[in-house]
Length: 287
Image (cartoon, rainbow, N blue to C red):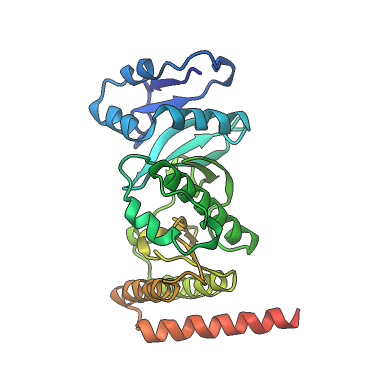
């Protein structure tokens, strides 16, 4: 397998210094010029990103997903995190995709295990580092699929393999939608966002899931609509720590809205979620 990574001579603003181009017709099973690719990076920060994320197995997974036409090439980085980096990709029709690559070496495995243990979907999982990361990516794909089937506002999952997840890109052109914490909503917008958050938490609960890491850091804003992201840690309502995670989600969001001038608190928001859940249950009962 051969994968080409090339520095872009003419870069739009805010793009990373490199693009990863998966030229399908150039791939073969005879060899894998990993070291040659690594040497193409002259910039130290680019090289560090490559070393942390793109090991041989990850590049092979990217190639496999590209042959399924989920994307044609991975273009530039839009988000870095402790557990994963997210890149913008383009398919053959120039439609943008988000490619999330979970790091297999520097991830907090104890934290991951806290959310996977007790999840009946992964009860036979081997406690091996790489397998845990693969399960984490698969878990996010499953959780996003649940959200999509329920028509919740979250990225649409398109495919996954090992530590790579391909999903809908939330943003415009090359710019990812801003996180809620990066915006300055008016009081009218804040009230609207509050209602959207209540609705999401209640609807997700009815699908037997709890986000478990909900905050203004894990919500994007697209055309005044909230999009809830980072759902790998979402747990089933039967998880041993489900109540703890649920209450933490409500606490985090109540704190955000309160700090931004909306009169609310944990008890008020908890009651609003419960009321919305009961309202939705009654509507389902009539269908």
